[in-house]
Image (tube, rainbow, N blue to C red; front, side, top):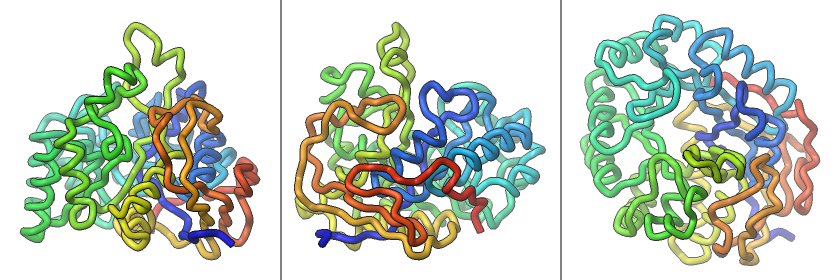
Length: 353
């Protein structure tokens, strides 16, 4: 008998790299990694090549997901100033809109007020808006939520000042939710010299005080645990100018189970952070007859042997609190004792509700 049975988990922040980055990850490899980590639904970000800011690019990603996804996948539309007027058409195929207020690659950064206003006016109110917002940009995001009286979701919160401002906004009744990534909970700037480029992501790792603040708010302010799974090859990471981003789909649940083992989280709170709240915030469909069976024996995370195409992890050497033994998706076993059984194309592509 398993030690623990969870619902199929939902990761609302992944980068599956298609179109344009299949050497890093594909829908087939990324969703295999997700299932191995107990995640049965992922939402994929729009900063692909080309980015998902036009109906043509969205259809490229959607078609690839239909053929290759092993678990359920939803796609974000991206906001780009030059493509803003296409947002209403994109909404039909997307679960949410992603707005980048801080540095990003390509044409996705939105840093002028008219474009931001257009995003909030053109995007359908029934579909969520998520924002990459760091430091003072968090205040901009919260201000937009207040002005337009519509919910926003703030991605990968990593600093004390950010989580405390979000807590204040929630306390005032503003419609703000947020997520935290495991790398900002289990690593800090003190790990950066040891990890080198393998510990470089955006936002960059915070101080131990930032980490302590995130944990202090894990039970009352944080809404979701989201991996920000952003794989790059080891060759890319060893280059003179390595790209930021780390993988995380296979290690997210094992690390959060370590927090359960340590008494920092209850199983009920873990379920809320990794299933209930993501589904509610993003209006995602139910997955009937879907469960994740867990063995709660601690184990040490290895450096390799992963299903993600990049094949490495920044968490090597940390102790995980449990291991996924079996995953059932809609009544069908898709993982058994480490083996992913789901075929490419067996997952569903979702548009939200």
